[in-house]
Image 1 (cartoon, helix red, strand yellow):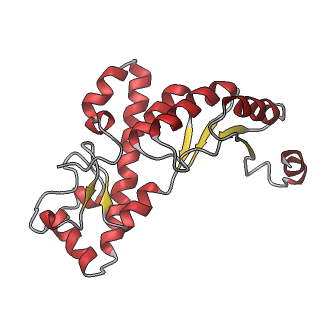
Image 2 (cartoon, one colour):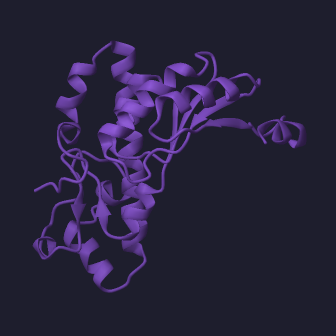
Image 3 (cartoon, one colour):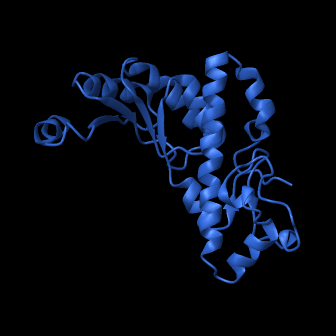
Length: 209
């Protein structure tokens, strides 16, 4: 099927066709899939079939086993993985690229990410909270002076500005994390990353206080 895709791909000058390694949680199947996929010359290669309901430890094991099977001189793309700890683990395994619906899907549901863990802004405790989502963030919501109380009001009033601002914040949150990861790589300072991002030391679904 991949060979047929390569033959039919008519936009190689403006569009990159990646091969996707599958195999579920089975290391032997991942190895067979990676060998077959990488035998075809492509602009990059992807790891698929993770983050489909398995615990984070399984995601980390699969990615750590699969990423080194892909060429070092081509982009390695991890599909559908989005929590902070998962991204850091994947980068350390050799992954370069990610995509995930998590920032915008959660933003639309009033769930926002911070360095200390996620917040669910619909909770009553944010009714009179004047603080921004994350006072260290420079996104339009935080830097723009929109409080947690106001954002909660937007969701309760079905005002679209709430989901928009929360989605923008979540996107910027993960951009900032990846920028700090780049710094950690460049300066060989992985040990300091967790100090700047306490969420990396907590469970992915822990709600920040």
